[in-house]
Length: 535
Image 1 (cartoon, helix red, strand yellow):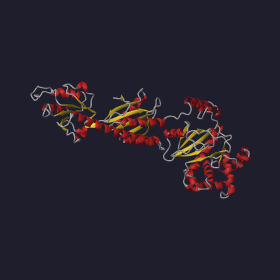
Image 2: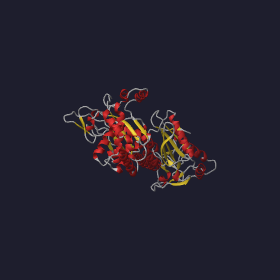
Image 3: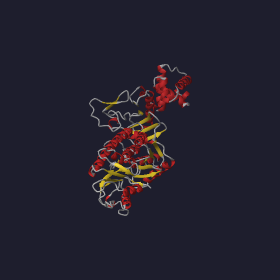
Image 4: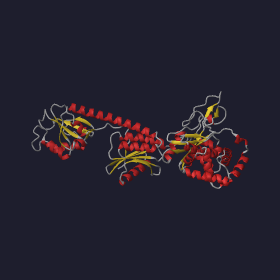
């Protein structure tokens, strides 16, 4: 039976009856009932009423000296012990503590028999132990349990936060949550499919029930629901209203504080799976529709937003990124976009592409000057630049390195130059991987190549490279090899091929071009041609 469960705070943890019996200062002795280790107590209450039902909330250790029980209760029919115990059980009483003296010298045999019949733990309280002493011991044990539970929750919160900062945040949070709860943690997508999971694999019945519970919370106003199937406690948490992501948890048992721990994980996963808002979704949808209907990039770029102040962005970076381990998924790509300050993310194959709005100081004009390595430093006498957005590096340098990712960053360009910037970012990423750098930026600076008109340069490039133009792999390998100063190993890393493959391709290029690739003049001319062939 699915039921909503949204407690506002972690409940006070109960204590085991065994912990109370282990207190030597109390001298308590269990006479009958289930093993003390299986009995939990939520409080202590004293009552001498013949019917304590109206005064119990459930889970109490009920303490009585038997004042309501006649001294001659040993005679048959003198007192209804069975009815008395039945009412305690019906009220949810956890255990019954009977005080010996001053009314009764021993625990009445009828009471022992009734407790045994109904499975109610019966504890003898010796004359030297007061009921207030027992109640105080219960509250002391509960206070210690609460302190221990708060420590556990705090440690779990810290661990989950640390997991969310890892390069693979979603799997890390799920692994940490499953480990803390000793069960299974699953992230369901908007279509109900498992996106990621961690922990012990449950049986088919539990797995189906958890998926059904996840669908339940997406179709109801409540953001949380619980259920129990095959002795396994299930819980589902909707990650944000209307987004469709759900966190499912299955654990063999549920301890006090587990809901709070799972709720912390749900908040973190909501942030990780949520779209980073740097402009309205409606505006971005409008931009996409206009592009599909033939609008120019320059016309739709303002709809993408992302700038500071009035949001007017005139230049953009293109970022290519690959995770250091594994393949990127939609969630990790979204998290990368959020870290870089842009929701415009495309995760295709092994590379994530992000379109990042350039901060004002990177949008050309006075105040900055590019360095040889692609970084940007202020011009002398220029006004102090404004604070760059989150995810950017030193003032004006554009997107910063991100833990767990290798990045290639283009120069800041206007929307009409996005395709060229995409190529720049791809080359920068290849160089970053080859040199094992966390980030490489494309450097734009004046050179001799700018003295040749683009049309003439492209015509010369096509003619020079015609012998290898029909084999894209040869041109790509030659470009990477030249950019890495003829390094076989680094070129192999950049292209994800064997170094012998690089040698064979370069030898083939030299043969087809009829050129000596050891000649620096030949290398320079070929590099010039390769740049303009793509341009």
